[in-house]
Image (cartoon, rainbow, N blue to C red; front, side):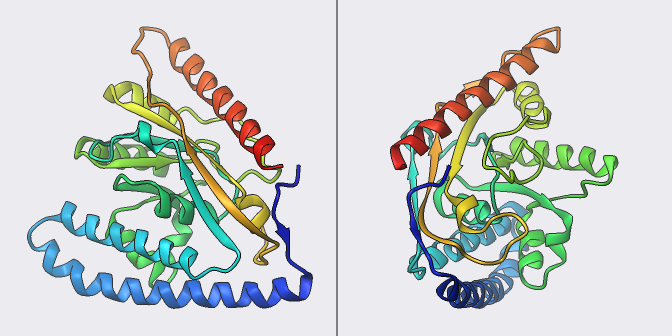
Length: 261
């Protein structure tokens, strides 16, 4: 289903894509250099405070990109249900590389996100991600998955939210595919609230395995009501809760698309 948005001609799309990636790199270098300047003095007093400063700079980076973009805007809704002074497990569907930018621009709570380890090797961007405490994941290594869970639990216990993409990879067709249980198990074990986020529009902007911007579009990030997963002796409660959350997110995504079509 094609979302409402102004199609960009091929010639214009190529030019705008080059300008966008140039803008992204320039802003990335600027904010990351600024981050290096402030990180180490603050780190002497508090690791958590230093990582928070770098996260705020990452949010400023994302908002700057959208502010200077002539073809992309972000609309965040539903966050009246979320207390910006509390920490949560956030889960979101995953359609595009742009999802992280949308999350940084729209989520009011400080948070860490999980990203594939290859991103941490990118100059400036990866260095900033590592210093900010974002969590690397090697999808080919089971041991890495365990370390990712432990790191996420550590941040949550320290009062910092964590964003998960429980599908595990980007959706190529825009549908919300089966969720892995990790984020839901952590939520249940720690007795926390989980906030289900639904993002839309990013697939149409930059599809998977593509660098070219196709549409001028407004991205939507919609926060649902926080939920708790009750603790139970059997694993069935976890699976039922996970599937119910995914079903609610799928219905909400369909409603968002029908409103925009």
